[in-house]
Figure (spheres, rainbow, N blue to C red):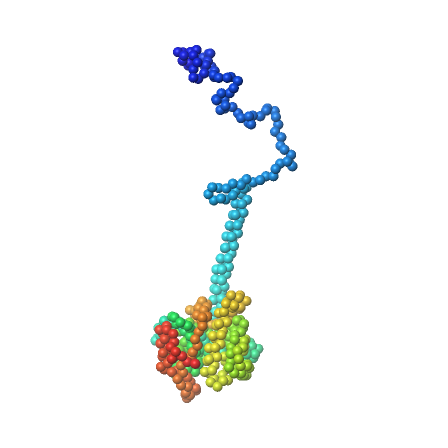
Length: 417
């Protein structure tokens, strides 16, 4: 309600000539501040009835995606998510590629390892018995070369001049000794070493007699006990007081396959060698030998020192084979490494507790170089009922075996040529 005391007087809010109707002061033809505030812009005013027309298609400028950057990361957005989706696809491809690589690097080799490990033939070679030596500080592998013809047909036996004897015997017994520090050493054990026999009913005899499966006796319970890997290991352990940790055996057929799998080995005979019994006829000097030739080279005894010369050739061959098998050109070449694994796992016989990784450890242990020696020989007498035997040099062999038990390198004075 208007203030009657000021009726008819101009006020700060304008004039009025009747109750409830206000009039604004100023020029009525011009908009005041109030009208300026609420009047529509001319650009927003449209003429009623006017139709808005689109320009022709050929005059429409091409659409350009507006790009903007965030203040934090500098990432660009094109308004349609193309770059975002492309980036997500790249991440997905990278993730899928990474998964495939992990499968190839972990699952496939792991599966191959388990499959190859299952191919190894196993035998109970390391048995506990009363008085067995305690574990040594070093690591020992007994490596046995068997003359078993298992897996060979008549044509192969004739080609390799192996004969067709049944059963199995051994001409090669070696101990690979890996000390705690220092280079590994391959120690040859003469097959005619005169040692106590663990087979019931047999007195002291040649150590290879303990391996022959034709040698049998009966124990206290009346059960038959024949020669084989376990009696051979026990015979060496009792004679040397050195415990064997791992057992590896390979037959003639596996020997040939293993050499051929690495592409042959280089051996260096000092003189020409010919031995029809071993199927060997070679010239002097370094030469590449295939499996059949290498087999004859390590088997022949047609040399002045017979078995002692053969021991040296066996050590020479084994060192050469290890160098070839562990060379990067073999390990990282699937066309050689896979046949090598197949040949090895198909022919090696190991103890029940041994795994493929133990063979790999053996291989890698000798990769850096190995020394070669033999159990020191004292005398080579001929005994009634036994024949020519090898007696170990007591003092020097004791130095060797003590070092093996302590995990120390074998002293020079205990080395045998």
